[in-house]
Image (cartoon, rainbow, N blue to C red):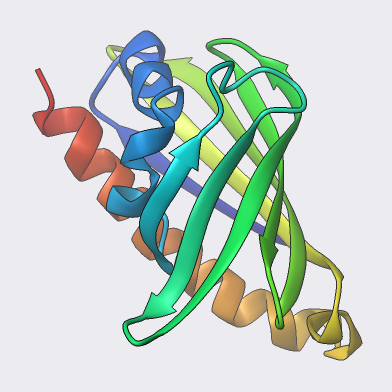
Length: 144
């Protein structure tokens, strides 16, 4: 399991607004190249983001589903990216002064990636989430 943390100079409410806007996911989720659809009730439990991963012309269509939500505090997702597999992703928000500490906990739960030893698969997940949180900070800190 990979755990990545970053301080963002924005309130938890502001960070949550970004997370709650599914159309913004390709701006900060590394690998998500476009959104095809966002369920009207996103980010309620059972709702999905319908996204594509990869680079044109080699795009794969898949989705991410909300498993658990605590508005303004946490979001638990099942992110699909076949043929690589599926990941369990938890995003936690904690107030920190005038900003927010965001922690992403992620691991592969299905597909071929599950056969890679945990320490080896944690490394690229961590690198990906470091960049994803950097992008999330850019969006949150610069969005009015």
